[in-house]
Length: 300
Image 1 (cartoon, rainbow, N blue to C red):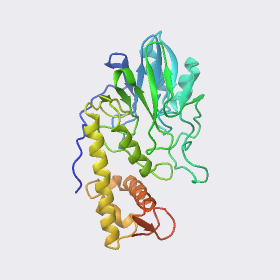
Image 2: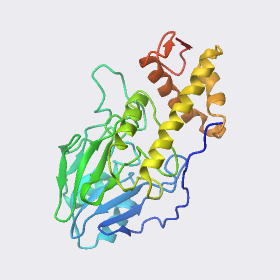
Image 3: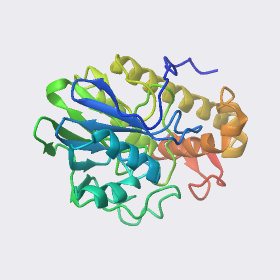
Image 4: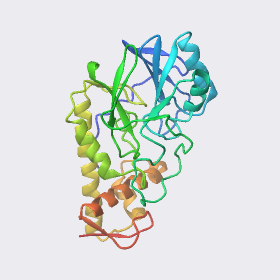
């Protein structure tokens, strides 16, 4: 068994209601609960009067309608997107059509990958292309809010977090969540990049995170350190399997993820593959053929 994580699943929401979570920060949660979205995707509104909408959410007309109804006569001036999974960016199209606001993001789905790295996984919003492309360190300013882009690849290659520096607040999207770990699914998901992105968060002085799913995180460094240790424990379990001659993802999943419900093992297999790829890249494991779920691996 891996060391338990300090997760918080105490999170009650009223779907479709725009609620104040902190001065200048509101959230409305889409009605798309599930094993990977928890209670649903949180869409954040920054500022007042002329506002930014961060992660407009899934393709649900009722979610956009509820957001616009909650804003009343306020104007949407910016649409910010952390990444292009289907529960985050598709509603940007309807919101842009309704408001005329431009979209801001790192790039299209898979946009952070190197040429020749192969096709990205299903589940992405391949239609989203930001009107304004932003990268690490870029600053986006509104009337009474401002955020700095922090490139945090790993969950996806185009994943951005947004930092409200003056408030020491970070909107980490799906990179760090308080209710669960994040899925890292190759080829667009990259465990090495994910671990480096976690390390980078420890260099920051954020006081609170508002992730896209679940409650706020008020001791973010404690949780980030726990996630790093958790991933290292998974690596150790994978290496132990390889040392015993257990060399396929299918054989390893029930052993490495014995603490995870069986119906989630397919998703766990994707993260296990990401761990294997990371170990191969680091020289700690060897692939006997292709870097795929069906491949065979051994210790080096």
